[in-house]
Image 1 (cartoon, rainbow, N blue to C red):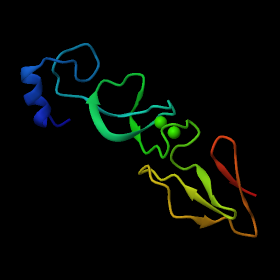
Image 2 (image 1 turned 30 degrees about the vertical axis):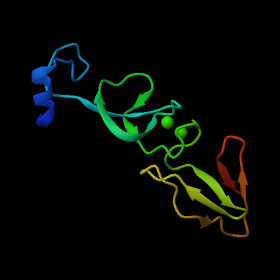
Image 3 (image 1 turned 90 degrees about the vertical axis):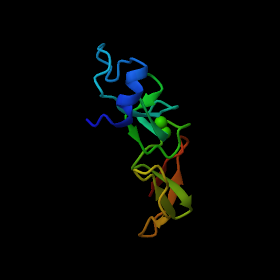
Image 4 (image 1 turned 90 degrees about the horizontal axis):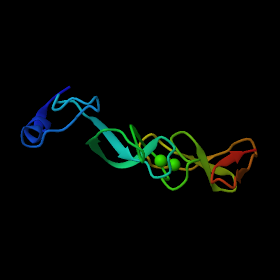
Length: 113
Ligand SMILES: [Ca+2]
Ligand SMILES: [Ca+2]
């Protein structure tokens, strides 16, 4: 693990930077705010010990809905859908194909049937 500026900060403020109870080992985790608790967060990473309300993975397209996270789909229009990308952005709409329709589910997901 690269110490970088973290080492400078630790010289001034002793901290348990890898959550093992020892102080100033120059190791920390990048975590993301995870408001809905689905294991995927949003926004800029924060270097700290992982705790409730945070996740190690980013990419949540909707951090207010625990059913929405990378790789799920939602309906864009009657016969098209969007996929939640690993970057936390919805992809461009794609057709369900084969005369199928996209049916929105109560949890916000979509199903092409
Ligand atoms: Ca989340
Ligand atoms: Ca979510």
